[in-house]
Image 1 (cartoon, rainbow, N blue to C red):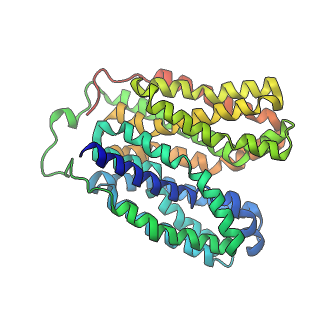
Image 2: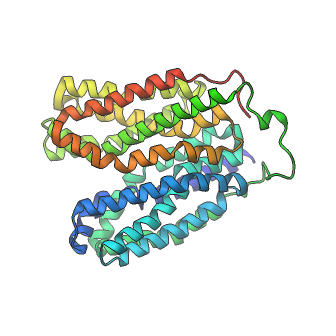
Image 3: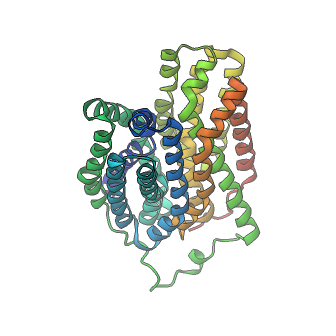
Length: 394
């Protein structure tokens, strides 16, 4: 596949990922309160249903990855557009808690087979070891999911109410998401079984089982800890900054810097850092949130901008690392299934992050950021313990 074709694959898949993230992960932030009022439940019930979706996505991830390994990403991602549309349509029609939880469970199935892990596996299935640049590319495009999604959700909710907003996102999956994923190339680079894999593909060089298990455990911990922190900050960052003494508008403005910082860091990864081993850039990124937390503790509200910029930059590079580290440490063979398994603890941690960090914030106030800072330090140590293979896996 030539370079222009790869460029268009990244643009199409990145745009489809922007739609998928905006209509699922970023939906409750703006629609939880109107949903709760209309359905006669507490806002916590809406977030509990969202947590259910994240748990379901964790359980489905390995199955989706295995399907992409066998058949390529195109049919799987096309199916997720239909699932997203069905789940969002069911959410628009929900009349009580049962309909609410059922709709979010269906959206969770789509999330488990249609967000970054599936997109990364799709690119690895197409490009093998050469997928690092493409993985960075789709995270650059989809890094604007909240920037695009939140204003569009707010406009649809103001125009049609929350049910109309859900229906609008469902329609976009059918009218925009389906064509974008339908234009993805079919995976032909590694046909399933008939032709046996050569020895160097069948067995990663010098990778005994104990080392592989240790590497998998360390990666699972790193991904779980970083997703916990990322989701906790996404749910509570404005409140955390307010607790540091910032007024609401200033807290929201500072928190909004996370998105641009993520994209800027990904541009850096795409340019200067692409010559570094992904482990090296991930180690640096893991220390960004703890460094920002130290500045916040030292300077108080005056350190809020530095904290959000460092947190966003670290999170932006670690998102890419979730796709590239399994590739460089284990190789491309069976990538989708392995990626799905590695991300199960991360999805579960993500599901409970808003609740747990909210409780910490209630009891400890601004000191609660120490918990996520310690997680960041532990991630950095785990990444320093990991060693790249002597020869790149195929």
